Length: 243
Image 1 (tube, rainbow, N blue to C red):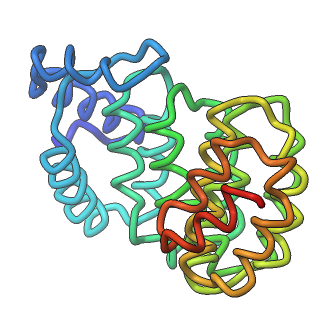
Image 2: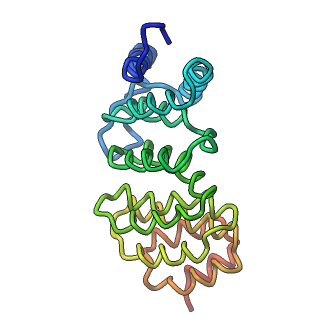
Image 3: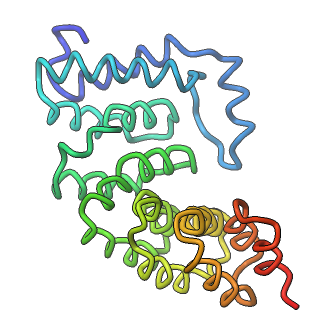
């Protein structure tokens, strides 16, 4: 970062220039293939983008502190450019132990800026979910998101509990949340719920498989099939092939 980049806005503008100049048009064209939504991409590979973000974070944290980094990330997580948003998340990943409730509320507000499943899952899985697992009281946010007309907030309700369920947290909350979202017709939300139930099944099959059997008649097929992906074949048949 140049010495002239003295404000978060200026630092973010410099990062945007680097991302724009360092991308690949060929890779950017290929990236669009993965998305139903139209996205803007500079064509960076994930490893290179993560490396650049970590280098920026290390240098800026020494000079300006982590609070400045959060402000830069806030500037970047806007608009529709994929790399800018993912760069913002890479600035914050594995740093969530340094953040409190003020930062959590800020990051939650970014859900209204989401434009694709990629920037959504980066934000929720790598930033919000670790913060929810670390402070379980934040889990109650998921039930508010599940009622939102915003599809990305409803998906966040599911993805936001994945880190916790891997630690065998939130089983009762996940059952309640699943019941709340079983009638959701949006495939983005269904895939998120299936992902959450799959991870819950891996962490706690003894309680989760009976729950899946209980909801198999009312749950969307996409949710059930995703939830069963890691089960043994006999267990999968118990859920998917009712007698």
